[in-house]
Amino acid sequence: MAGDGGSNGEGGGGSGGGDGGTFLPPGIEAAWGLRERPSKGPKPGLTLDRIVGAAVFLASAEGLDAVSMGRVAKELGVSPMSLYRYVSAKSELYVLMQESATGAPPELFPPGTGWREAMEAWAWGMREVYHRNLWVLRVPVFGPPATPHMVAWWEKALVAMEGTGLDEGAKISVTLLVAGFVKNEAMMTADLAAAMAAGDDRPDEVLARYGRTLRRLADPEEYPAVGRLLDSGVLDVADEPEAEFRFGLDRILDGVAVLVDGGAS
Image (cartoon, rainbow, N blue to C red; front, side):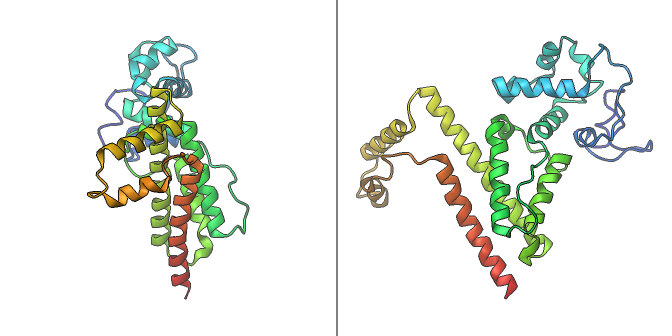
């Protein structure tokens, strides 16, 4: 980690060493504004914000795989090497792209809102971020959330649970549980939507085809539970994604409510 910040020889405050380094990954340093910026770029008007904005544009238009230092440089009309005065590596660019796309959390709930309603608002707000920027779901995880906007989102979740009586360890565990559910649901929804779009079929048609396939492949004597599922007709009509999300979130918060009630007794 200590060697990452100065690997390009210019433009960075460094992530370690004896010159006031912060011992942070370069992307985290950059997100918090702890790194020195070049006083003059290789081309007038080139800034870190422009670099990140171009990368976000590419990811939104073509997916995360389209983002490379060379492609971003081409979008900006500069040489790839000029970007390294501002961004040390693609992994750092990913961190800054995610920070930009996530944004600061809105006022999800007013003071005094009950913990469950507040956590519901937090989960739906985070889901909206993912569905607005599906490429964010593909960003590799480089460590715990440590950028300003992500810390602000975690702050909101912890504030939401202030009246629960849970200790800090339980609060962060609940936050991780809900955050994991939100991300997983968004990823599954995005994958299913992409598969359906590729086939140009409506969700009901895809589900009906899946049901017919299961009927052909799954002998009800060997898979009686699957047979009962098919006979029930629940696979004949696709549920709205919001309904599935609401069901899962409610069940998670039901469990948290048991924890809260048990902790208060």
